[in-house]
Image 1 (tube, rainbow, N blue to C red):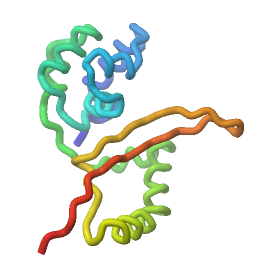
Image 2 (cartoon, rainbow, N blue to C red):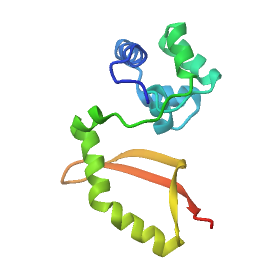
Image 3 (cartoon, rainbow, N blue to C red):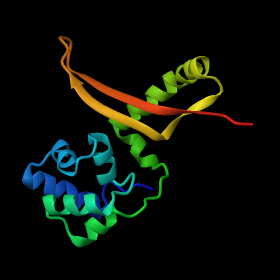
Image 4 (cartoon, rainbow, N blue to C red):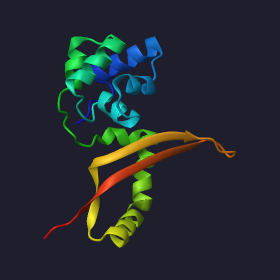
Length: 148
């Protein structure tokens, strides 16, 4: 599983970001990696290459233990406690409502297969709108056809 949100690794990273005022985007720029990838790695969803972990460690003045933890392979399992967070729940709700539609459209456009969550790029942006700013997420996933 990715780190528990109360893990010492995430706690140290968040504390150092708060103390220094360094944004997620600044960290991503510092290690020359995409924003979403960087945040996911720092929150324990995937390992960072040792060099990027070292660079983040220097930027945030992280402990050697935290830098080492950033480079370790995580367990990727679901944490039911995350579903109680309103923002995360809305993503679950989105998939519950639109998942069958996404599946139908993928199958119509590409045939029998799936969109990869492993081989994908995710981008995040803020867009101004007169009715209130919009969150723009783009998921660019590789199509993987089923082979029989």
